[in-house]
Image (cartoon, rainbow, N blue to C red; front, top):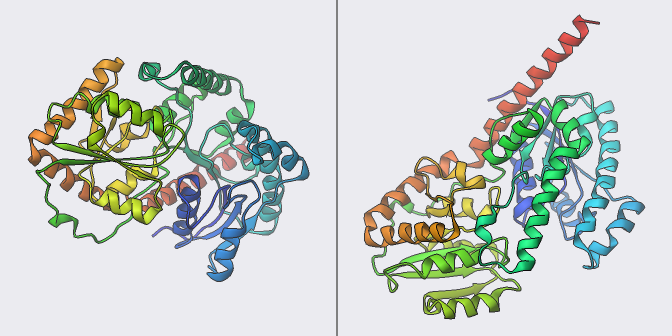
Length: 432
């Protein structure tokens, strides 16, 4: 076990009940606190900046001597700028307000560093590269990551998207390019960091390209070790039960899966369970009718986590189709349930599902990609033993991808960051 450390952690979003960024903050915090003392700066457990009531109440009722929770409230200026986002008028305005929250967090962090013996400072979430905060300015070893969001949408996958969607993702790619090239604060944070952690190989590659900086790859998500008698499961030869989970939006790209399934030769040998909701449901139902696959689809709508996990556990295969994804929670829910995943070979899945950990479909032209996707599903239907082997491999990943193993790697990164920082300090002192 590594030596106990005192960590200053910035996790903007933390919640014991929510997923996504909230779950990233929660799991990093609680697992780090098992062996370390953690001062955590947070600003969100509800819907909008400054809403931290849920997490505050949780620790009031469940105090942890290793966790010191500090809720950072937005300034009046941050609230004013963020108002259009809060009332649902203009969501992206949040990114103009957020730096002011980060500056407030930095002020509080300086006070903590002045009064406590902090060993390491870690900027955790949001994991997007656009907002590195200001804690890198503290005179302490600084870790940033896992870093995500520094990838570009593959335009080949937008063939069946409407013009508005194509324009949106084109603009998003341009914004990413400009920020990677021109944002001085991102560059400064990357240069000053004692250690950078990346959520995917694509993010690391782009930081190497634009900033000349690299670091280890660690997913921001992990699996949970649960006893489900997974080794006793058998494949249902009647039909391949597929599950797809997510918000039904253009980014999640459910169009692609529908097109692929329409090409599957064994049309009576698969079922698709869709968990999620969104404005595109009716349009997708129409597309399913036109493709003559609607009878094979079960629309579950939105489900609470326990219900969603129950559906996952009853499936044979988890399907992913996103245009862009770091490491989605549902992938690790599937791993925890012993359910293998088929995904496009890109982003976080390129690393997580490599080496036979799942099925990766190479992305080329749109038509060729959906053919490959369909062919891999046909292979599983025609050869149930392949699915059995995949399930056994997935079960073996549960421990490897667990939070315990992940936090162990993070603590090793902390040790290296502290060591690198101390070497730099000695080097500067020597030449002064």
